[in-house]
Amino acid sequence: MSLSQMSQLPRSQVFSIYLVFVHVLLLWAAIHGMRSHYSAYKAAKKKQSAVPPPPAYDVWGDLAQSVRAGHRSVFLIPPSTRDKLGAMLESMGGFHVGVELGVQRGLFAKQMLQTWPSCSKYYLVDIWHQQTNYNDLANVADQEQLRIYNEAHQNLAEFRSKTVFLKNYTRDALQFIPGHVDFIYVDARHDYCGVMEDLTMYWPKLRPGGIMAGHDYNTALDVWPDQDWALCMNGTKIYSAVQGAVNDFMVRHGLTLSVTWGEDNMFRTWIVRKPLHHVNTG
Image 1 (cartoon, rainbow, N blue to C red):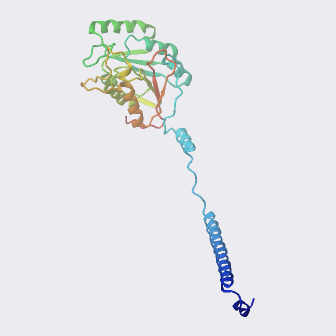
Image 2: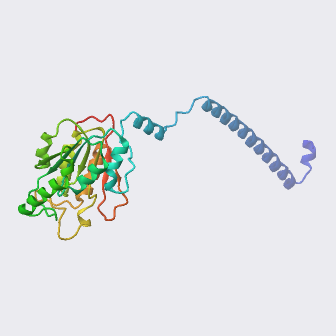
Image 3: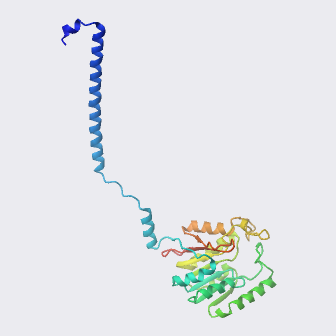
C-alpha cells in the first residue's frame, strides 16, 4: 500500500495499521534479544565446562584410610555381655596383660581369667577399705572389707601365678604396674570425679591398640535410692556419674565408644579400643 492510498483511508484504520507495525518491530526486537542472550549463555556454559570441577570429598574413604593408618579409634563390635570380654580378647590375639580397677570379691576377675587363657599377668587394684564421701553399696565397713579381700584371694587361688593384688588407691597403685598393658577394666568408684580420674591416669598405661572397658555405664539417677553416685570425694555432686565421665573422656580424645547390649540388668559395660598410632600423653 502506497502513502497516497493510506492518506485516503480513515484515520482510525491508519492508526490500526500503525499499531500492527509497532508490534511487529517489538516482536522482532524481542526475538533478536533472546537470540543474543542465548548465544551469551551458551558461551558462558562452554567456558564454565572448560574448568574442571573440584574433587568431591570422600568422607568414608578418608575415614577408612585414617583407620588403616591407625590414627582413629574404630567402633569395636561389643560382646553381648561383659562375661564374654575374656573370650573376645582371646579370639583377637595379642592380649596378655590386664588390669582391673575395683575387684571386690574377684568374681569378674575369675570369669576373665577362665575365658582368657593367654593372659600371663592380671593386676587386681582395690583399696578394700571404707572410703569417705562415697555412697555406694560396695563401700562397707573395714571389717567386712577385710573379709571380702580374703574371699577374693580364695576365688582366684587357681590363678595365683598370674594375679598381682595391689591393695591401694588406683592412683597409688599405678606405679607398681610396669610398662604398658593390653587391657584395662575400670570398675572402682562410680562418681564422675573418681571415674574421670581413673580414665585420665590409666589411659596412658594402655598400649596403642589395647582395649579399655568399664562397668556400670549409668548415671546417678539409674541406681537404687540407698546409694548416691553423684557424690564426689570432694563433696561436689555430678549426676551424670559414670556415663558422663566416660562420654566426656571419649569426646575429649576423639574415641569411638561401644556398649554391651545383652546384660540381664541395666548395668552395661562400655568398651573402646586405643588407636594404633595414639601418642601416649594421656
